[in-house]
Image (tube, rainbow, N blue to C red; front, side):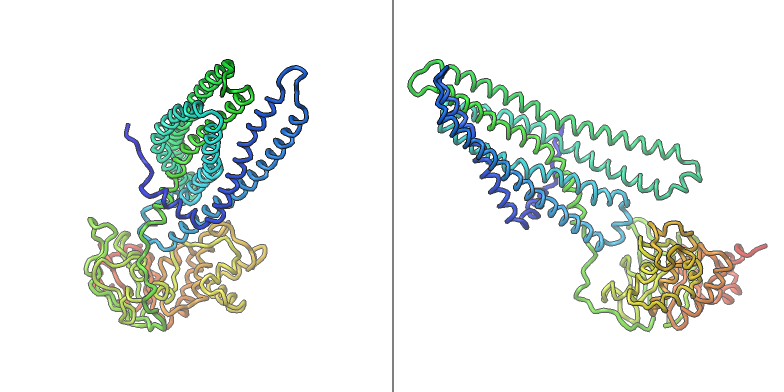
Length: 584
């Protein structure tokens, strides 16, 4: 069976994050040293206390009492130190987890849309939540048991060598058996934990998809099929989890068996030494001390073997997290100049673009938009309308040719400054969990109350906003809560009206609005777009009749261009589309 290992360098990356908290790590190590020293001194005192009880009526109570007091003090000190160490370890672990999550989320903000479009939301959420939690559990277990375990092993070995080197050598020779067994099992569990983590991510993606589209699931009677899909992936998760847990759980009993054999061997050899009674032989108290040390010496091996298997899971999850944080971000534009005070001239020169190399979409697209022009983009589904918008906003970079604003290539200015010149209303509405006012002022937080209300009235949403329980201070739930799709779209329109940048993009901005309200919105749009370069993507051709230029796209090319009347007179593809919508 092939052994799958954690991605190369994963452990180094984990240690690099821990290194930021080196002072806390040193404090944890110091507590481990002191608490282990206190615990290791107890068996010596217990052995001496036993030797104070020589026989019936021959007990040295004075010495015995002193030893008992010393044992109590050491045990209390060790308990306090272990509590401090636990608190420090928790602090280190969750600070590292905080840093990793911050890095992952920050990287998400800089990733190109191509990454987000090719990875499911649930899979990404699983990495940020479930994988980081699993990583935290393994890291905390490592801190808690690795430090104290290593110190205990070194300390007990030193004491055993001082008490009886022959028995100490016997223990050292036999102990590696448990390590070999633990390593053999642990190195083979990684691939199961990796598979478990991947299946868990797919399950999260499926749940997110089904819950978010529950209306569609029920409308198409897809519940049974959805249940089957969930049962299938849930069963896969069960199988991979059982395999991971089963193989990892073999470690502890195997190492305990080996350690019990070591304990029995030391007890047998020590008993013969006590019975012999020769010079240098063990006393009953010393044998008790040696057996206590053997137990303390082998116990960390059990714990560490358990830590190793759990750490395999943690490394598997860490590998997935670091794979996200190391994704190539969008090229940095910090040293580029900003685009400001644009007139609104937009030029596309020989633009070539495709989402995948083997599927060409846009080839040799030329376009020259004058400042203040209203440009409508129409065409059948999949012709490249939304792709053209993505290129204008530089959500994607062209594969060939150039896109320019006021004669400046958009790749030669910062993305933030480019996008700030556009106001955008999409068919897919997005409202965050916040008040209506906070949603409206998303692009302009300093807007006055009068400006907010004016924008809401212009977009015809002031009426239903005032009917909400707290009006503009009503907190909307996830994605707008109980608002209708049309109401959410009106709020998005109001949000853009409040900003009014020099260029506008309206991508099916009124697709969810009734015809009567749409007519009123068109009047507001006319005022809003006056003097501003506007790109209007529409399927309903009634909304683009007043556009200065209508671009008719087909298979990634502009096949016709002109105003409404001109295109109708030509009797081409646009006329066919228009007549198909308004034929009686």
